[in-house]
Length: 101
Image (cartoon, rainbow, N blue to C red; front, side):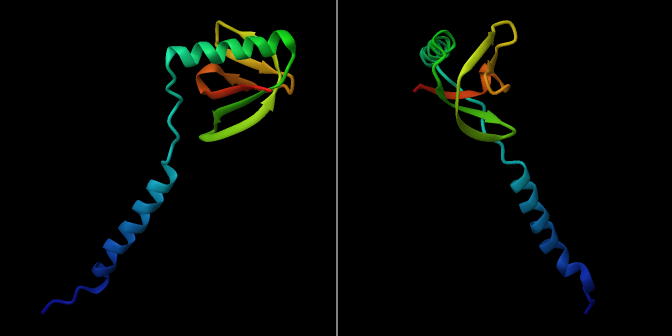
């Protein structure tokens, strides 16, 4: 009979590194909104811009879903960026939901 030595521990180490890979690669999907939802978001954002009223916005940033209250300062239709009064910028494609306050 042949001694297996440390070979028997190799599969266990492979399972641990596989779990770490799965943990690190969890990414949230980008918002997939219908044309009606996109139109509604756009109208709410424009209303916030013109009336200077705050909105509750849910968006994706650094693979995290964030929900914050913000007021729109400026729109950049070419790059599809939205600038807020707190000096932050969000791309329109990152937005999940917008609610008028």
